[in-house]
Amino acid sequence: MLPIGEVLVRNMMCDDVVCGCCDGGVYETIEQLFIRCLDTNSVWRYFAGTTGVEGPFLQFKDTVYKWRKAEVFAKLKPLIMVVLMFTFRQVWRRRNSMKFGGSMSYLCMRGMIGKNLILLAKQLYPWMHNMLSNCPKVVKFLTEYTPRIDCKVVYWKLPRENTFKCNTDGLQKESQLISIDIGNRFLSCQENGRRGVAHPLGGDTGDQKNTGT
Image (cartoon, rainbow, N blue to C red; front, side, top):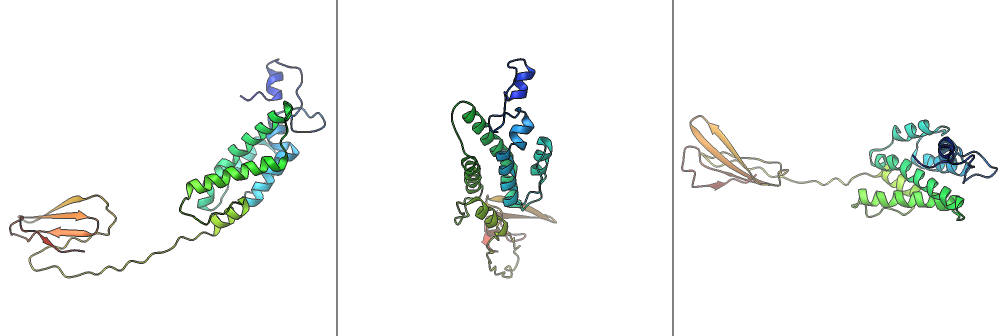
């Protein structure tokens, strides 16, 4: 449990604690510090407008629910799930900084959250070399991203007489041994990526023939 004002008062550690992020001597509660504070609520609305999460954000549990259940594009979902953690962390850092003689502006707090989201996006999607360094543009980039489609031409040839052709789709990276029993004759096929090796049916298994795919 964070040592927020209402927690300290409840545990009789102090008589009264005002919100460290607000002016006017507002009583510090979880709802006030993390949701209702003007600067904090502005942060929620800013990132909600950027990512498409619907507000308003008036209560703690309701805010958590809306961010966790937000319907967004698949590539945005991991970022949406950590906005809560990043925002709570920066609000708490700002509260402690201001309470003990330091300072942290609203823009600085918002900028740190956006920076962390961009760093996470680059870690999740390292192949996106054109990832921008601006949070709204990153969201737009991930929303409109379309993967490049590669085409592959595969030629098929008839197997030789008295041989069995083993075709693979190239998905298996590790070599596997496939054994097929046809009647009383034993067929052994070595699968390794794009190659298929078959033995003549009814012949000597030591004389292998490469049939390709």
